[in-house]
Amino acid sequence: MRDDVLLSICGLHAGYGETEVLRGIDLVIHEGEIVAVLGSNGVGKSTLNRTISGIVRASAGTIRFAGIAIERERPRDIVALGLIHVPEGRRIFPNLTVLENLDLGSYRRASSRRALNRERVFSIFPRLYERRSQLAGTLSGGEQQMLAIGRGLMAEPRLIILDEPSLGLSPLLVEELFALIRRLNAGGVSIMLVEQNVVQSLEVAHRAYILAEGRFLMSGTAGDIASDPELKRTYLGL
Image 1: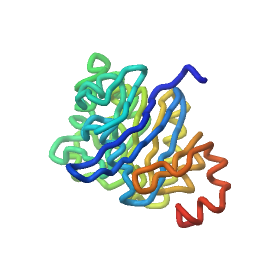
Image 2 (image 1 turned 45 degrees about the vertical axis):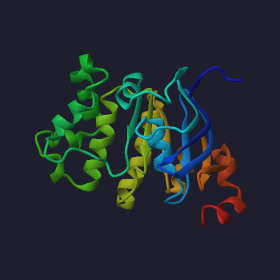
Image 3 (image 1 turned 90 degrees about the vertical axis):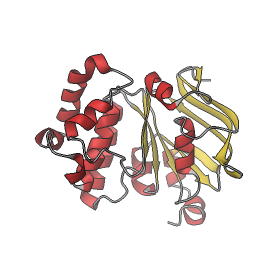
Image 4 (image 1 turned 180 degrees about the vertical axis):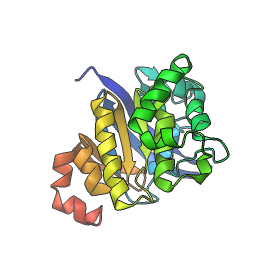
């Protein structure tokens, strides 16, 4: 048994009111990994992210991050531990500047190193530096995704959850995004990549889980899953 477990989920159930969406989720992410959670739209990926982040309350099961039980913690306290969720749809503040959006990322964590982390984000995303005084709502879709990820990096994440980061991006920007994910991971950030983009996710991930109807149908190394023709045909539509 590896002793570098960063996130551990066991028997997780969650949903909305009477509707159960997650039906017994078990997942492990180790320090330094990129783990992909793959599945089509509507299978429970975003609910999983929101439950891990404390936005949706688990009805059963456990979630441990860095050895701490977080299934009953508030979102802001989960952020303070270093678990950062970059949500689907970017969710930037359109009427604030790029700089103001970034600074909000360090509100609960790493505020004393705000200036240093801002410079780090600008080194990763030079376009954000060029547009630092621009209102975020006037950025292009690709620039808004950069800002959403940059805001997450301001909190010095131990684990960052990227929820559909390639959604709505051009093919060229998608290539840039997945190259960025590799660089962030090489720099020491553990990543949970939640995507519909199966092929490129499996190219960057170390391991992967396949989600359907609120359950994981399969998990394993990204290479094993990528080479399984039955899985690709039946569950991923490839």
